[in-house]
Length: 148
Image (tube, rainbow, N blue to C red; front, side, top):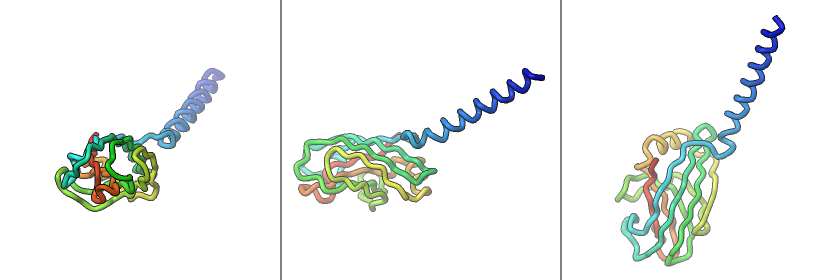
């Protein structure tokens, strides 16, 4: 009987620890990872620029949060903005998430993003792109479609 009580208490402690760890994962940067290779050639129309970079995106649908880490360089102009847009490759689309980009290397988590939008980005990343705008190319100097 005493062994059964100890076994039950041990199980309760293990389950409590596992729950705590699983709940902490999103706070540690968990979520669905996506990426994009950014280049001027991907812009529509492409500017005469050799700028390029990468973007890593983490979608946290349950929290309504999109986190982005952009590393880029070679811009012809001063970086002034960056966004996630809705459109497939070769087509310009509207802004769906403002990334408040102010430099070529930029990291941000944006809260309050519609959970249905995050779900659609997660399920159909090729229908969304990241671009970074500059004074040289106000419509976007580099762009990349999201991918899993």
